[in-house]
Image (cartoon, rainbow, N blue to C red):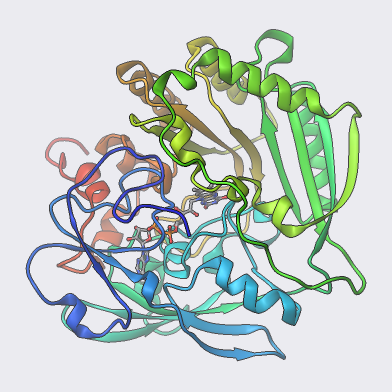
Length: 440
Ligand SMILES: Cc1cc2nc3c(=O)[nH]c(=O)nc-3n(C[C@H](O)[C@H](O)[C@H](O)COP(=O)(O)OP(=O)(O)OC[C@H]3O[C@@H](n4cnc5c(N)ncnc54)[C@H](O)[C@@H]3O)c2cc1C
């Protein structure tokens, strides 16, 4: 599996820390001095999975399946088990993940700690809604089973709790039944944001999975044009095989000049122009539908040594597309480009975590090559719009939000802080809480 231990997916910021591998999560892993932070596959983009000056507890060696009930689809597995491993076990038996992100190289512990969401948020809510229980190892050696009814406060703090409440040892998850590994998908071209919102209103009822790819470089009348991708698990008996291994990997960091606004515009035009018909229907394997980027291996390296920043926000949506258009217009006008922009409507199923990210409304995720001060200034400007309009930025993708923004986005942060394990900390947490004096 690709990935460099002790880095995050955006390759920014860099941190100096000790990485301690865990094959069996006993008390011994908590020995020693200094701060601790669990670490999965480093698929968080910014610094929420980094612990500069401290220790990362790499859980990926803790990857045993503990129990499975073929009648109910309830599975219990160690927290280092990846979604890829779980799919390899579950799909041939007719079960699928209840919620999946855009990569399968994510650990169960990481999925809980960021309370991740997927293309079915409007139907299934977040990952944490499907977690029946987990065991948490605290630094004083206590082990606590947490569920919505057992230690419920710690359950709500740990789901979306950014690894700060202790080490998740195992997770018990309810899978979703399938009769085929195939997805009946539709890809629909839309010319602008108004068309996107109209398509969402109509398709979210027909499809379990919906998401849109948007050309962030397009301006004027084409602002917000893109492809709307939706799908359902194919019904009736079909093949039940899991994903093949990745074919390609970017072998080294691309030179910094390889990505600039011209190459990004060209990429966007090509992607959008590739589909000639308004609607394209296909029956595809789930691998291509959910994880197209996994086929490229370490694609994050194409951004070069300076790394990149991903920015994802969620904003309440009340039927007026004006604010979303304004944000798109600012991004396009900044010419800072975005290689990938993913737009989706979140549903209104409540998330279980105190710091869970999703809220009912619209969410947009964008990649920005790290161009230094200009990139940071734009993202701070966008934060201001999100703050003023009751939205949030996703900590799993963040490397730079201010303490003031974090506290506005996550008003439950104080209640959450009561559950933090005294020895656990992260670069992210120190950054968003240390300016506490006079900042609230
Ligand atoms: C290509 C790509 C697509 C993505 N798509 C989505 C998406 O659609 N939706 C979405 O929500 N996210 C998405 N993400 C983000 C990703 O799903 C999350 O960042 C996920 O949490 C990463 O899991 P990980 O195992 O790599 O954990 P890491 O990134 O290593 O760690 C994430 C957090 O989990 C904590 N943690 C890890 N293991 C444990 C444990 N055993 N106990 C306690 N805490 C633990 C860490 O301390 C850290 O705070 C995407 C990322 C990539 C690279």
